[in-house]
Image (cartoon, rainbow, N blue to C red; front, top):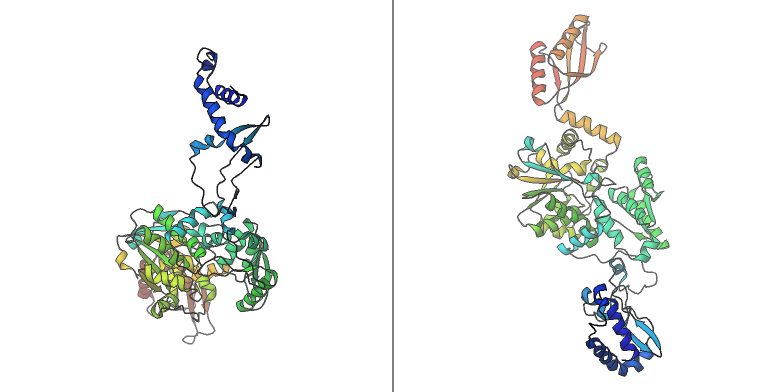
Length: 539
């Protein structure tokens, strides 16, 4: 037996159990000796060729060229992990033992975004990765896998509002995301899909929307330099929040258009990537992951209600996921009747860009043009119905969510429920319905105005005026009636100088709060019975 055969035989013995080794002499099997001799005899013819080979070879090089981010000229055959032991071989060359190793190097998913980088053209403007195409279910599934550790899987819970509206209502509480908006899903997938070189240079946005807040937060988390250009008229609260998320905020210009032009100029001069909320495949796929979660969380679902408006990416992306999983689920969009951008765009077949709106502060991200043909095509193909609601319905919806769900949401978050408040979807009676509550970025001054106005619209804060004689007993009798009817007096005042009827008469104006519409009607009848000349201020 030559030395190489003895070496291989010794390796075999090392793998034997102690009991087998104790019987090594008496159980000696000549098969291993002959097998080793034959093995190394066959390899004698290859020794010359392997003399020039490197001492260590990894599967990083092929004759077609080096692997670039997991791509090779020809895909190597798949290797069963159980047979990895067959890829180790030892040779006896010139009295030394050389070890030849082959490693299975898996493709790194993070590096795939750099694959096949295009040759940079001089003076070219940085752009987002591939986009203008309709998304598929596979795109949404890939987005869900990639962003699962970066966004919250928000609950979709049964609501106490179900009994009030005669259906099973489940609320998808996307306002519980870190920045209070569903936009985080699309933004995170968009940022993680950028090339590494662009991530190193940074990104820039120009708005005070939920999209900018999400970009500021997730870019900072991914250690991507992020710049936000805001107009000087932006709310100080928004500026503060954006800075706390980690962005460098620059105030420029008096209008949003001025800040956008400045941001584009900075992007061109410094190599930043200018981001805006568009219907790219990456962004829509990220938003569509919410549809996957709703389908998983609510079994036997009949319908899902989404906010629509100009920025209908959430509606389009989630509809693509839901209709693939169950074509029988009704997907419904809701927008304001003050600017029905989506309805008009669907009628004309083209995005409408110049839709005026005078209530930007209230509607926020919903106030804007229809931002792309991809979203419009998906909406026209997959969405079953688009309805419009009044501002009053949205305000009452915000009040209902605050009272029943302890959820402080803005107009975009409440507009889905507003369709039920307005009675626009009677076909959903006794059905199982999911409503997306997708935004909760409501500033405190605006929230107070919205709640006060909603209480008046709901006939729970009322105002009336009546004439009384100028003596203490009459006002006390009025207060006795209000006490008996169990109402809460919010404000009461007397007017002497501008009363034109009697010199000794006063006009008393009261603002009171009731439990509901029925309670308000009872109070009104009681007052009219005692004071026929009472004036009731209608809402």
